[in-house]
Length: 346
Image 1 (cartoon, rainbow, N blue to C red):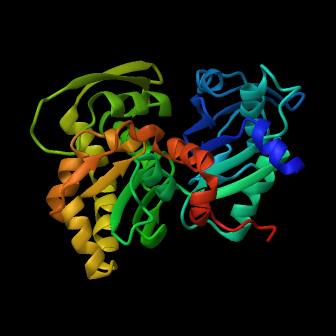
Image 2: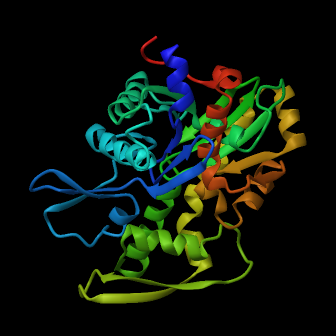
């Protein structure tokens, strides 16, 4: 009885706990938080100074006693305590208007496909310590497919590629589960590193990760030819130690990232090769779906389509697909409970 009462009045939330960004969906309200997964800590007293967007603005600009921490790496928790503090901050932010009245929330949280039992338990424990009453886990590609309103419980094949900051997840889904998959750590952050390395090797220019990300978003493309765009890269000259700026073109950035992009395409081809032929026929008919922040990379859909000979479709608002999926699960928990992973407590 008390459980039903709590379920009725609690502000249940869905979380896309990403390496780069954390999105929070509140039942009946939609996505209310979309902030970087970054925490700034004062090492003198071990106190959290800021979390999210405010902390990201500090990257590369802090004095020695302020540590900028990204508590997730490759889609999994690398720093338990900091992750707990970050989640606690977001949960409090959701409940700040009526926290004294609302019971602790139930939380649906997306995790990568190939996490270990230890990593899965770390997510559950961190979320509970942050204030959750009950934690439900769902694999991120499944959540993204649900967020895209795909009928995943039907006996049909759907292929989804979720390109995040720390991981790229390739999954073939049928009957509410993952049939074949591939998970690799080549994703958005790796492309930023490619650009940093390219600037170092070709221009003796040291870039910060924030600048590299901005360049990627602004002019990066994976197709040769097309519109030639240019942007200024600003950083430090590795020879003189002085400030330096270089004008780069979209074709140069393509040269920097194309090897990593081809690894993603190869993972998609490899997944298709392992997929049963009946499901491949379904995928060929329906096309492949792209989700995640990396899906917006210019020309990526066309390149994948060329290499696989399968139509490629971009999910509406791909960055929020996983968070929307966790929200849909919250709204219809009884009918969608089969897509959830078993709890580590059972």
